[in-house]
Image (cartoon, rainbow, N blue to C red; front, side):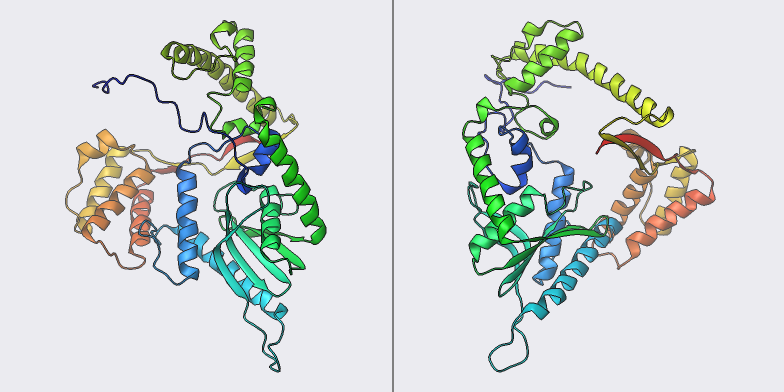
Length: 401
């Protein structure tokens, strides 16, 4: 593999030298460590952004983003649930609207999608996913399309900050319902935000603002480091790494917390050495902890056992590919490119099914509704009839509570 063209200087990740700024989504992490800055977004964040845009488009009766494929059952069901919640909340708040003049019919509630507000002490305006408003009452709903369940709305710093911003936007409000909606799990959490909550949250935001002004003196490594964009250059993290590295037999002077220089290739080599040692230790710790909790039945404080469905695998790749070729011929998709499939794809049910779907879409840019799902079901049924489709056992692992 050719080496990239040499450059004069290493370019560190963009967030490593960034000053922290108060924002609703970062308040919980910044309460633990005021030096927290967001890391790079991954595929999960991109998926969430896309689904937010799809729901917004449906509510505003606009075309959905081009990257949204309603044939992806998981995405379609999440969007459908979010829209059901939207309709439910709209009906719920309508009775609160007062009559108009001499007429008995109430006012229609105001509906805001991506409503921009300014929250006290936060550096930039924030956007609320969905807001319903009638005189004296409002509902704010935040879509959570990811897999994590966050703090309940009555203690959730992000949602409470939204309450502050919405009340500042309209001081005539008497109460605000804060709602977290999880379309993936078809569930909602909600709480009522009152003037008492407003005052308490305002004081909390002021406290966090003061801490963030002198963040260098209050660095506090913890769980948030996993998602923080500063960890490579953070002296507090480097100090902890040096201690662990020393305990495992390494030279702690190679990880000098007072000299976090990401532009020095030699230092990067030292960091890599420490990482490999600690990585091996962490792997053994996780393996041992899983054995203690899952196989020996001993509770580990702060952690719980969770499970995920086992993945599917193919027990006979040759017969699976022959079945795939047969399915492609049946749908007029030409010959299967065996070389490409074997060289560049992991021959798993998901990968091969995706190859079939992409081939179908290439020939049918606008496939009939439901045809993609039928195609996926057909190839899975074919493999199942050949008795070469195997579902691996359910997987158990530890997760922090």
